[in-house]
Image (tube, rainbow, N blue to C red; front, side):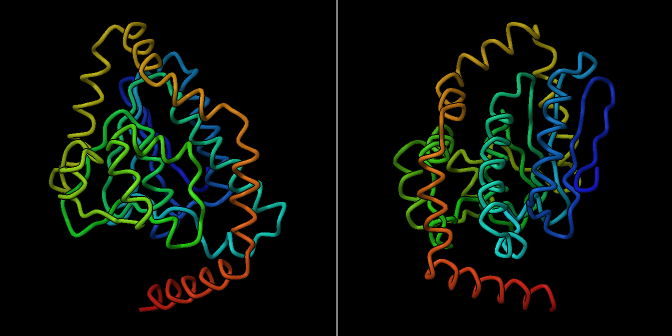
Length: 256
């Protein structure tokens, strides 16, 4: 694995995102995550999972610099596989906790939303979905995933304005469930997931799937029409112009 690391200790697996400073998501990371989630879900020696990133960044979301240069086939593959990844994360049958050590906008936030519990490190970090200001149309299924945790009204308003929340705002709005000191992040996440792991595995897993049944059904539905609309806007000249400006700002910031 080139973009993620996997460790297993006492029936608890930990996936650490490991792609550059910001853990931005590309096709390679998506493929590796999809394989890891599939394998860990089927591994009888694994009873729980933590997903984490680096100090300062959980994940900055889709790698816009790389994705901007994808051709149309690669672009469709990127967004198709990204939604497939979320379907797999949402359906993961075992206890699943996110340990968020830093910034987690856009696609990083989406991945975290798929877990059962989110612990975030204290600090001057942001988390949320800012796709609309970037020029990316939000599929209904992502809105429903967001609303599953923070409620429809707030999800609607926050998505339309592309609101990125501070750590304290995320806690107050139930986007994250717990905040701790950065040094304690993995220990707090482990304590939570092992609490889940003490429950009867069959009862816990089936109950989780029952409560997520509608979400799982939506992610497994035919999303091609939503993707067509999304990709049409992705390739629109005004969107490309906005993305180019954002990429120039990202490159400038990374060189400082």
